[in-house]
Length: 286
Image (cartoon, rainbow, N blue to C red; front, side, top):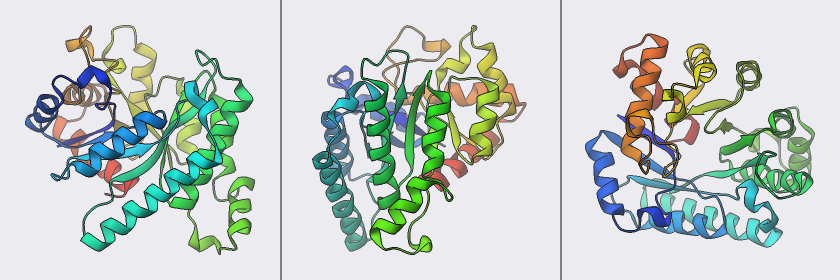
Protein backbone atom coordinates (compact mmCIF):
# COMPACT_ATOMS: atom_id res chain seq x y z
CA UNK A 1 0.00 0.00 0.00
CA UNK A 2 1.10 3.56 -0.75
CA UNK A 3 -0.23 7.10 -0.44
CA UNK A 4 0.30 9.65 -3.19
CA UNK A 5 1.16 12.56 -0.93
CA UNK A 6 1.03 15.24 -3.63
CA UNK A 7 -1.44 15.09 -6.51
CA UNK A 8 -3.39 17.71 -8.43
CA UNK A 9 -6.22 15.55 -9.73
CA UNK A 10 -8.60 18.52 -9.44
CA UNK A 11 -6.75 20.12 -12.38
CA UNK A 12 -8.49 20.31 -15.79
CA UNK A 13 -6.14 17.65 -17.17
CA UNK A 14 -8.27 15.10 -15.30
CA UNK A 15 -11.73 16.44 -16.09
CA UNK A 16 -12.54 13.80 -18.69
CA UNK A 17 -11.50 10.68 -16.77
CA UNK A 18 -11.05 11.60 -13.10
CA UNK A 19 -13.07 8.65 -11.78
CA UNK A 20 -11.08 6.23 -13.92
CA UNK A 21 -7.82 7.76 -12.65
CA UNK A 22 -8.97 7.28 -9.05
CA UNK A 23 -10.00 3.70 -9.77
CA UNK A 24 -6.61 2.94 -11.34
CA UNK A 25 -4.95 4.29 -8.20
CA UNK A 26 -7.05 1.97 -6.05
CA UNK A 27 -6.28 -0.95 -8.35
CA UNK A 28 -2.56 -0.17 -8.07
CA UNK A 29 -2.78 -0.57 -4.30
CA UNK A 30 -2.90 3.04 -3.16
CA UNK A 31 -4.62 3.68 0.14
CA UNK A 32 -5.15 7.42 -0.24
CA UNK A 33 -4.54 10.42 -2.51
CA UNK A 34 -3.77 13.86 -1.10
CA UNK A 35 -5.13 16.59 -3.39
CA UNK A 36 -2.79 19.53 -2.94
CA UNK A 37 -4.05 23.07 -3.40
CA UNK A 38 -1.71 25.57 -5.02
CA UNK A 39 -3.97 28.60 -5.45
CA UNK A 40 -7.25 29.91 -4.06
CA UNK A 41 -9.30 28.17 -6.75
CA UNK A 42 -7.47 24.85 -6.73
CA UNK A 43 -7.54 24.75 -2.92
CA UNK A 44 -11.31 25.20 -2.94
CA UNK A 45 -11.63 22.48 -5.58
CA UNK A 46 -9.42 20.10 -3.58
CA UNK A 47 -11.43 20.63 -0.40
CA UNK A 48 -14.74 20.15 -2.22
CA UNK A 49 -13.49 16.97 -3.87
CA UNK A 50 -12.22 15.52 -0.59
CA UNK A 51 -15.30 16.41 1.41
CA UNK A 52 -17.63 14.94 -1.21
CA UNK A 53 -15.66 11.69 -1.26
CA UNK A 54 -17.37 9.20 1.04
CA UNK A 55 -14.82 6.42 0.55
CA UNK A 56 -12.06 7.96 2.69
CA UNK A 57 -9.71 7.85 -0.29
CA UNK A 58 -9.29 11.58 -1.02
CA UNK A 59 -7.86 14.28 1.25
CA UNK A 60 -7.06 17.95 0.69
CA UNK A 61 -4.68 20.78 1.49
CA UNK A 62 -4.93 24.55 1.05
CA UNK A 63 -2.14 26.81 -0.10
CA UNK A 64 -0.72 29.32 -2.54
CA UNK A 65 2.13 28.31 -4.84
CA UNK A 66 4.98 30.87 -5.03
CA UNK A 67 3.70 31.70 -8.52
CA UNK A 68 0.50 32.95 -6.85
CA UNK A 69 2.00 34.52 -3.73
CA UNK A 70 0.49 37.89 -4.68
CA UNK A 71 -2.94 36.44 -3.82
CA UNK A 72 -2.12 36.15 -0.12
CA UNK A 73 -4.27 38.21 2.24
CA UNK A 74 -5.52 38.15 5.80
CA UNK A 75 -8.99 37.54 4.40
CA UNK A 76 -7.87 34.40 2.55
CA UNK A 77 -6.03 33.05 5.59
CA UNK A 78 -9.11 33.70 7.74
CA UNK A 79 -11.30 31.89 5.20
CA UNK A 80 -9.04 28.88 5.21
CA UNK A 81 -8.88 28.89 9.01
CA UNK A 82 -12.68 28.83 9.09
CA UNK A 83 -12.74 25.89 6.67
CA UNK A 84 -10.16 23.97 8.69
CA UNK A 85 -11.99 24.49 11.98
CA UNK A 86 -15.33 23.51 10.44
CA UNK A 87 -13.73 20.41 8.94
CA UNK A 88 -12.27 19.48 12.32
CA UNK A 89 -15.63 19.95 14.03
CA UNK A 90 -17.38 17.83 11.40
CA UNK A 91 -14.85 15.04 11.85
CA UNK A 92 -15.25 15.07 15.62
CA UNK A 93 -19.03 15.09 15.37
CA UNK A 94 -19.15 12.21 12.88
CA UNK A 95 -16.27 10.23 14.32
CA UNK A 96 -14.66 10.31 10.88
CA UNK A 97 -11.37 11.65 9.56
CA UNK A 98 -10.42 15.24 8.94
CA UNK A 99 -10.30 16.00 5.24
CA UNK A 100 -8.12 19.15 5.26
CA UNK A 101 -4.85 17.74 6.51
CA UNK A 102 -2.07 20.19 5.59
CA UNK A 103 -1.14 23.70 4.51
CA UNK A 104 0.46 24.12 1.10
CA UNK A 105 1.86 23.86 -1.28
CA UNK A 106 3.61 27.06 -0.35
CA UNK A 107 7.20 28.22 -0.26
CA UNK A 108 9.71 30.03 -2.41
CA UNK A 109 10.66 29.82 -6.07
CA UNK A 110 13.50 32.05 -7.22
CA UNK A 111 13.86 30.16 -10.51
CA UNK A 112 10.58 30.75 -12.36
CA UNK A 113 8.18 32.72 -10.17
CA UNK A 114 7.69 36.30 -11.30
CA UNK A 115 6.56 37.37 -7.83
CA UNK A 116 9.02 39.52 -5.88
CA UNK A 117 11.02 37.37 -3.42
CA UNK A 118 9.99 39.52 -0.45
CA UNK A 119 6.32 39.01 -1.33
CA UNK A 120 6.97 35.28 -1.61
CA UNK A 121 8.54 35.28 1.84
CA UNK A 122 5.57 37.17 3.26
CA UNK A 123 3.14 34.66 1.77
CA UNK A 124 5.20 31.71 3.02
CA UNK A 125 5.27 33.22 6.51
CA UNK A 126 1.49 33.67 6.55
CA UNK A 127 1.08 30.01 5.62
CA UNK A 128 3.48 28.94 8.37
CA UNK A 129 1.56 30.98 10.92
CA UNK A 130 -1.69 29.33 9.83
CA UNK A 131 -0.13 25.88 9.98
CA UNK A 132 1.14 26.34 13.52
CA UNK A 133 -2.17 27.82 14.71
CA UNK A 134 -4.14 24.97 13.16
CA UNK A 135 -1.69 22.23 14.14
CA UNK A 136 -1.22 21.11 10.54
CA UNK A 137 1.95 20.18 8.62
CA UNK A 138 3.27 22.23 5.71
CA UNK A 139 4.03 21.12 2.14
CA UNK A 140 6.97 23.20 0.91
CA UNK A 141 7.76 24.15 -2.68
CA UNK A 142 11.42 25.10 -2.92
CA UNK A 143 13.27 25.97 -6.09
CA UNK A 144 16.59 27.81 -6.04
CA UNK A 145 15.72 29.15 -2.59
CA UNK A 146 17.27 26.58 -0.28
CA UNK A 147 18.57 28.68 2.60
CA UNK A 148 15.67 31.15 2.66
CA UNK A 149 13.16 28.28 2.80
CA UNK A 150 14.98 26.54 5.60
CA UNK A 151 15.54 29.71 7.59
CA UNK A 152 11.86 30.65 7.46
CA UNK A 153 10.89 27.16 8.58
CA UNK A 154 13.34 27.40 11.47
CA UNK A 155 11.59 30.63 12.51
CA UNK A 156 8.55 28.48 13.28
CA UNK A 157 10.44 25.65 14.95
CA UNK A 158 10.52 25.31 18.74
CA UNK A 159 13.18 27.96 19.37
CA UNK A 160 12.30 30.26 16.46
CA UNK A 161 11.15 33.83 16.86
CA UNK A 162 8.07 33.40 14.70
CA UNK A 163 6.87 30.46 16.80
CA UNK A 164 7.48 32.25 20.07
CA UNK A 165 5.64 35.33 18.81
CA UNK A 166 2.59 33.23 17.94
CA UNK A 167 2.66 31.78 21.46
CA UNK A 168 2.76 35.26 22.97
CA UNK A 169 0.09 36.67 20.65
CA UNK A 170 -2.44 33.96 21.47
CA UNK A 171 -1.60 33.87 25.17
CA UNK A 172 -0.91 30.15 24.88
CA UNK A 173 1.42 27.88 26.75
CA UNK A 174 4.08 26.26 24.58
CA UNK A 175 2.54 22.84 25.16
CA UNK A 176 -0.71 24.12 23.62
CA UNK A 177 0.83 24.84 20.21
CA UNK A 178 3.18 22.55 18.29
CA UNK A 179 6.04 23.92 16.15
CA UNK A 180 5.88 23.49 12.40
CA UNK A 181 6.24 20.13 10.65
CA UNK A 182 7.30 20.36 7.02
CA UNK A 183 8.08 18.29 3.95
CA UNK A 184 10.14 19.54 1.01
CA UNK A 185 7.96 18.18 -1.77
CA UNK A 186 9.43 17.03 -5.10
CA UNK A 187 12.89 17.27 -3.59
CA UNK A 188 15.36 18.42 -6.23
CA UNK A 189 18.22 20.13 -4.43
CA UNK A 190 21.63 18.86 -3.35
CA UNK A 191 22.65 16.14 -0.95
CA UNK A 192 24.37 18.77 1.19
CA UNK A 193 21.14 20.72 1.58
CA UNK A 194 19.11 17.55 2.18
CA UNK A 195 21.35 16.80 5.15
CA UNK A 196 20.45 20.22 6.57
CA UNK A 197 16.75 19.55 6.01
CA UNK A 198 16.94 16.20 7.81
CA UNK A 199 19.05 17.63 10.64
CA UNK A 200 16.39 20.29 11.19
CA UNK A 201 13.78 17.53 11.55
CA UNK A 202 12.02 18.04 8.23
CA UNK A 203 11.02 15.52 5.57
CA UNK A 204 11.85 15.08 1.89
CA UNK A 205 9.44 13.67 -0.69
CA UNK A 206 10.47 12.11 -4.00
CA UNK A 207 8.77 12.06 -7.39
CA UNK A 208 9.31 10.24 -10.68
CA UNK A 209 12.33 12.49 -11.31
CA UNK A 210 14.45 9.96 -9.41
CA UNK A 211 13.81 7.46 -12.24
CA UNK A 212 15.22 9.73 -14.97
CA UNK A 213 18.63 8.70 -16.34
CA UNK A 214 19.95 12.24 -15.78
CA UNK A 215 19.01 12.28 -12.06
CA UNK A 216 22.17 10.65 -10.73
CA UNK A 217 22.74 13.30 -8.04
CA UNK A 218 19.19 13.01 -6.80
CA UNK A 219 19.53 9.25 -6.51
CA UNK A 220 22.44 9.90 -4.14
CA UNK A 221 20.00 11.84 -1.95
CA UNK A 222 17.62 8.88 -2.01
CA UNK A 223 20.46 6.52 -1.14
CA UNK A 224 21.35 8.54 1.98
CA UNK A 225 17.91 9.64 3.17
CA UNK A 226 17.16 8.33 6.69
CA UNK A 227 14.36 5.81 6.68
CA UNK A 228 12.10 8.06 8.75
CA UNK A 229 12.61 11.17 6.61
CA UNK A 230 11.02 10.43 3.23
CA UNK A 231 7.70 10.06 1.45
CA UNK A 232 6.64 9.53 -2.17
CA UNK A 233 4.42 11.52 -4.51
CA UNK A 234 3.58 12.04 -8.16
CA UNK A 235 3.03 15.82 -8.41
CA UNK A 236 0.63 14.78 -11.17
CA UNK A 237 -0.22 15.71 -13.86
CA UNK A 238 3.49 16.58 -14.07
CA UNK A 239 6.71 14.52 -13.88
CA UNK A 240 5.61 11.04 -14.95
CA UNK A 241 8.30 8.48 -14.07
CA UNK A 242 10.56 7.06 -16.77
CA UNK A 243 8.29 4.12 -17.60
CA UNK A 244 5.48 6.54 -18.49
CA UNK A 245 7.55 9.60 -19.38
CA UNK A 246 5.87 11.88 -21.87
CA UNK A 247 2.40 10.90 -20.65
CA UNK A 248 0.17 12.71 -18.21
CA UNK A 249 1.24 11.61 -14.75
CA UNK A 250 -1.34 10.09 -12.41
CA UNK A 251 -1.39 8.68 -8.85
CA UNK A 252 -1.04 5.02 -9.84
CA UNK A 253 2.41 5.80 -11.25
CA UNK A 254 3.75 6.49 -7.74
CA UNK A 255 4.45 2.77 -7.52
CA UNK A 256 7.28 3.16 -10.03
CA UNK A 257 8.91 5.77 -7.79
CA UNK A 258 8.67 3.44 -4.79
CA UNK A 259 10.21 0.64 -6.86
CA UNK A 260 13.14 2.90 -7.74
CA UNK A 261 13.68 3.80 -4.09
CA UNK A 262 13.75 0.10 -3.23
CA UNK A 263 16.36 -0.48 -5.93
CA UNK A 264 18.53 2.46 -4.84
CA UNK A 265 18.44 1.59 -1.15
CA UNK A 266 18.74 -2.17 -1.64
CA UNK A 267 15.43 -2.84 0.06
CA UNK A 268 12.44 -4.96 -0.78
CA UNK A 269 9.51 -3.08 -2.26
CA UNK A 270 7.23 -4.22 0.56
CA UNK A 271 9.70 -2.83 3.10
CA UNK A 272 9.79 0.53 1.32
CA UNK A 273 5.99 0.61 1.17
CA UNK A 274 5.74 -0.19 4.87
CA UNK A 275 8.24 2.54 5.76
CA UNK A 276 6.60 5.12 3.50
CA UNK A 277 3.18 4.39 4.98
CA UNK A 278 4.52 4.73 8.51
CA UNK A 279 6.21 8.04 7.68
CA UNK A 280 3.22 9.43 5.82
CA UNK A 281 0.64 8.55 8.43
CA UNK A 282 2.78 10.02 11.18
CA UNK A 283 3.42 13.23 9.24
CA UNK A 284 -0.18 13.88 8.18
CA UNK A 285 -1.79 12.49 11.31
CA UNK A 286 -3.80 9.68 9.70
